[in-house]
Length: 284
Length: 232
Image (cartoon, rainbow over all chains, first blue to last red; front, side, top):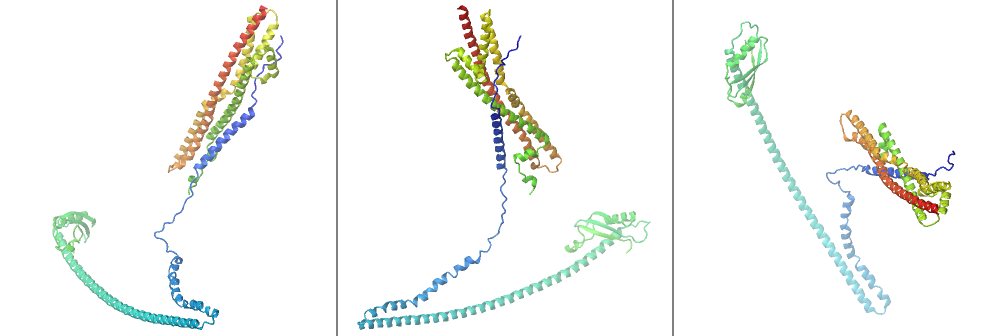
């Protein structure tokens, strides 16, 4: 038996290359979209630096300067205008005579007019001059007044200053007196404190029962908390004598001495209440 | 300014700075996506052509021409005529061969013809359905592959975070972003693949139905012809 010669026909897709190109194109488009989309979103705004000013800086003087000279040019032309005003008129009037030399009357008239005008201008000038003189006089007067005023003010100032100085010196003296009084008072307080300190130590000494084994003159330092009435609240040994029995004896003596004598003076009392550092020795 | 904060989170930067497993996953997904789009376009062209050829063949077949002339035409065109034309050619050539042999019963001739047509039909259908399974696989698997890359990337980001005294968002953000790119790529590969697969299976089913109907109708025509010739 023979094998069939004609192979069956099968369709072969022929558009493979085109399909591949299209697939690549789809991916390229997608990647581009993603890349550009993401980079658009991640663009940070450039940082901006800001200087904060409490007040505006002083404006450049250029702006202020023109305003001052501004009025000056406006004022200046006024006197100038007054002076040349007659001149153009004269010039305008003069040309007609050459045109009509026969008419002497008119010429004369013109002459007269011109003279009149000249006179008028002269008078105006004189008046202006007089005005100016008056003005300068007034100005001088005003200046004098001003000077006098200034002198007066200076005098007033001086007197005021002197008064101030006097007051200050007085205050200083008062202060000095006060300080003197204070130092005096301090001395008084110190004496009172010393007095009461002695009283307290005497009272405690009277209550102290010295132990037998005590030798020498050891020092005990105690911190005593007192009520304002002088009653002992607590006693604590801050510096021991080295002899425990003696320490105890001193503590007991202080407690037994309650209430301690206290000065009535408030400043002096501050040395004892609420805490008192008490130093005790067996022998004076 | 902190360079960590000012770095640009552009896509390419993230992809190239990703850890190796995530990069491998991305490469795999890119390949899958490229292949699936390639097959999508191949199938699109092939199915368009198949539908066009089928339409044209049906128009000619039912146009009332001579069946022998049509057979000559299709045999001359060979592979160009389309799937249904090839089924017709296979069936008719088998029918001719069987009829030439003496002593063949009508039912035997028709059965042989049908077998030949069915074989060609199966082969054509196989050609049409080629690569569709790839689209199905990409569509169902690539989201998981992308998810794997994402999970791995986030794991690495958090492991890196644990060794830092002060944990800030800026330290995890690049890691998570690069990890999420893997998921995005997986979805990008999967969505067109799934759409393409569903669309093409539907188109191929319709083509197959048309071919089967044609086979039945053509068998009927051949049976009628053998009956008349045997009667005559």
